[in-house]
Length: 236
Image (cartoon, rainbow, N blue to C red):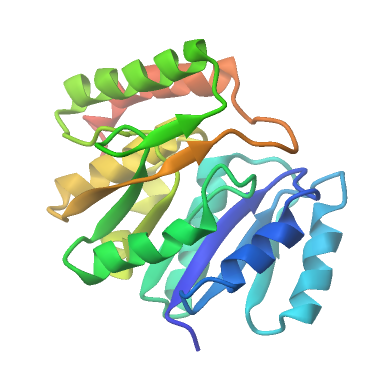
């Protein structure tokens, strides 16, 4: 059994799941893939079912009844992975904004002292491709805002490309985290830092999606903006 697993939440990602699966499994990291599909109406779940048959024992699927949010998808996935003994648990998107080649670098960071390795757009060497300047500006200064409020030194606080050692996830009170969007990503880093774990940012090149639609919304932005104040009082 592989000791590493990549969790990928999906909603209407039928154009991406097959190529992403093959790209991950062709990397040097011996890992499994867990898709969490929120009953995608475009047939994503059926596509993953066919990949499960082709890559039996390496690709897994958890189906949910509907679109319940990114944060709850990851919490579902974390519990699944912890129950099955995985030691390194990755998060990544299905749209190729995160490069599967970087999985190796995140794993190496955890093997060399980090407890949580973060694929970072804003640390030295990190880049973003194909984003309009206005979106970059919002994202960059959102992380500045978070660092000021929460007093953490992470430069890419909303990053969603990560590798956790299982001890980090075991220490966090996952059921106490109510957030569904970017606030969830912020809260997980904050909780890990509060628990005394070592966080390390690894520079990546983030590329805007080519297929499918972005899940970003005003509601998600508001949750993150106000959520950072709630985090300071939460039992994590």
